[in-house]
Length: 417
Image (cartoon, rainbow, N blue to C red; front, side, top):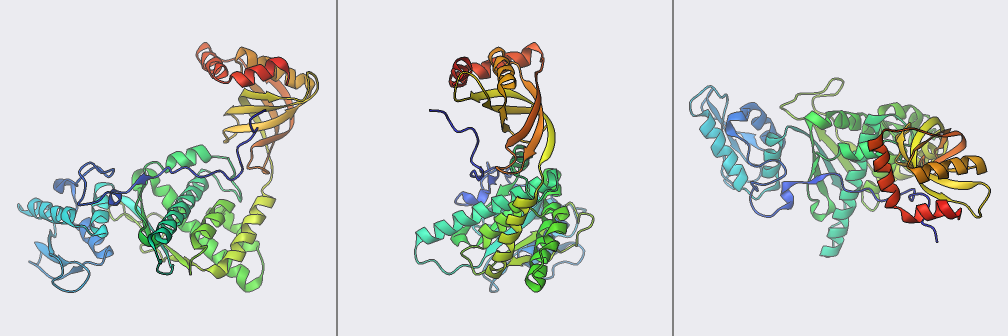
């Protein structure tokens, strides 16, 4: 029995985003991923005011030029108001800011935690909302929350892939680096499967947020064009904006089973508005009626993405053939030449022998061929010019250790099975 030669084409996306502190019960946790309560001395009152207004707070006067009184959303008198200094120029400014932050930290309201996250780590905020019926039981709400979380992660991954390169279908290309780029994002809970917020730190994630803004609006325009004219040409030009099969599949996952979904984006007030984007981006909405166009676009992207000519250097990690002689199948762990983790290729008898010898002595091989889109860019066709590659002792020792950890592959290489 041999293990599968390739990963499944539609593997589950691992959760590369971190839990929002709102996942934890009670008041603002001092050990939260956001780094604890913000330092009042480092908080800009203007930024705090923008964040409060974003969450529905209203400015209700105060001492002109010194501080403003902010009241929370909801009926008057429902919650304590906040005094926020207009500047940090007065002796009591830091004290007022400290009191305001403490009041927010003690609040059980989700928006209070979101304000604190944005102050601690300047972040662009992406908000998803799914219009779903009121669930009859807790299980339905839990399922909806899982669906919303999964769709949001797929959308973020699609944006990270588009930052790495424009393509109608990315497959396995750039996937490792795209997933790594999601590591700094904070993502919140999705109560009832309706609302979810992700905080994308500006320092590391601004390119992702900007790319998603352009890609989502381009996808919306392409869907509108297809529904109005029946033509798919707009999806071709939308690739340059970041639209891909990965994004269309993510939007389908978001909308499926709902009455519609909306994605809104707010820029971090501390960082300002990125070039080429509006100060207050309009939300993007998708409905169940958009799903046929999105499915057709995804199939078109998958079908039309061309193969790529590459020269790959990789470590041989698996060999298989039906007998002691003849052609065989080889699997390489890619070290250089392509943004994929592994490739599968078929080699003639001579090239297979070279690959087997390199495998036994712990040397990588270099091979030229065509990286095919079918199967997610995991298969190399027209393989030629297979040669061992010399590496330094440290790298060779590491490859040999990897070989020893894969005894089944070693036995296959020796027996020719």
